[in-house]
Image 1: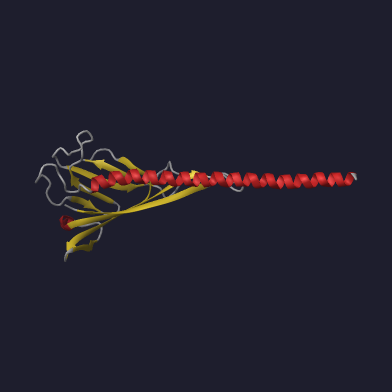
Image 2: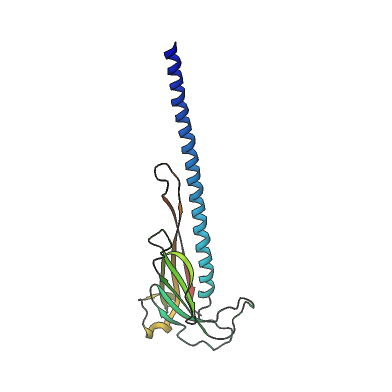
Length: 208
């Protein structure tokens, strides 16, 4: 009888342990799922902010509040990962340009040493040769392509870097941007593993 009680106790302990491990594993999976979703939201928010800045700048390539101020070529540097162009930067107070030509530059540099992802680079922006400011700290790609107008379309691509003699013929710019965000997961097997989320966006801009 005593042996039966001992066996029952052992059996109950084993079953209870299994149930406890199941519950803990379920909780860990929930935590990891939550962090995956958080990582995705961070990635979407970060790239969304960068896209907003890029879209505002690129949509104003060649535009100036004062007419006939900006002359060709409106794009002064056109390479695969770097671009400089003439525009009239918007004043944050008035929402308008000041009628004076500005030069806006973008480039991707790296790596971002503060990021756990080895593929992360810094997408930076400069105005009129001023200090480079970070637009996107988790950029894994910033790829530019340039096209000239030919036979009623903009499909005639130009090789990069675009030569000085061809800069004035650029009539469309496309760009692909990708980014990676990371977060620390949680599991029994690998409690410090990184959860990654990659996001991307493609844009096209016609030159005025």
